[in-house]
Amino acid sequence: MSDTRVADLLAVAETDRDREWLRRSLQTAVELELSTLPPYLCGLWSIKNQAPSAGSTPDAYSIILSVVLEEMVHMGLACNMLSAVGGTPHLVAPTYPGHLPGGVRPDLIVYLSGLTEHLVHHVFMGIELPEHPVAEFPAPSGEPGGTYPTIGAFYDAIRRAFAQGGESLIVGGPQLTTSFSDQENETIYPITSVLDAQKAIQEIKEQGEGTSRTPDAPGFHELAHYYRFGEIYHGRTLIEVAPGRWDYGGDPVPFPECWPMAKVPAGGYPQDITGSFDGLFTSVLANLEAAWVEGGTTGQSFLQNGVNVMFTLYPQAVTLMQIPAPGGGNYGPDFLMTSPNP
Image 1 (tube, helix red, strand yellow):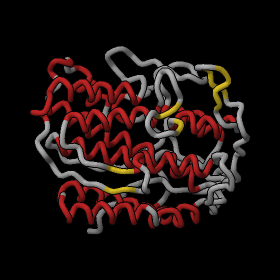
Image 2: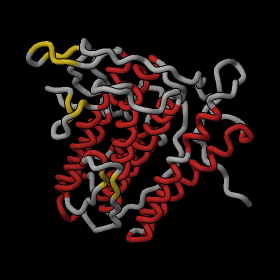
Image 3: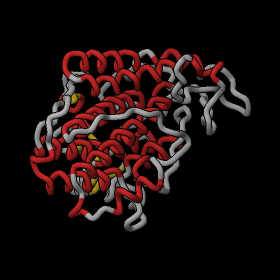
């Protein structure tokens, strides 16, 4: 998202943030949610043992997978919210390394690489950073009037616009649904009212950041993404050591053995290296975009096709992660869109 487009949205006074402002902001929300998936997926796929550890203590693979599934839901909910106010989601590949869309966390540079402690701490936790973290990490700061200091602050602006405009904002665009498990937190549901939109925004915020009082996502019996990633970085589970005080001092969370995927350079890799992966990724985005264009049964089919293709990306990615790259480390997926055949 261009700096000019961000400034244009932020320049609109809150009292003037109408349906068109919501459409533009929710399109940004779709781009924002999509932009979190490639770095998380690169970290996940670089783990050599693609299976949860035995026992009840969380492991890095299970933690990242759970976050990926919830981010997919968040993107679907953003698409439904955009459709509900008369917009049509546009799916376009993010740019890496680069900033998050929408002027969110302007100091953060997101990059793609295999799982490392730096990636977890500076990228994963940086993306999910709460406005008021209850365990470590300094509070974020934004440029007044120019950026959003956190993803939560960005969604708060959208929530206020829904509250101000009321039910007249909802015009009944295509609503798609799917579940990635039997858990409520892994289900995309319809947005047919302002109350539905506010519920979705609250879930997106709390699943990512927790609250100012607790690291948990209320109602889901799980830690928010930021603190789940903190367990990987610190190598221990987060526990309450005193009323209202948390520390990473619980059971060990061993850092997994990973493929040494190097940081993907600006512009990605030559197509003779990553073309097969990029072609599948392009198909994922095309199917997801068509899903909300078509709606109904046809849209649901496109949505399922997109999800199915996404789950075929892993074999391509792990093959790349075993090929030495110039300059050290191995290749990896660069998540570029391929050009259509002439």
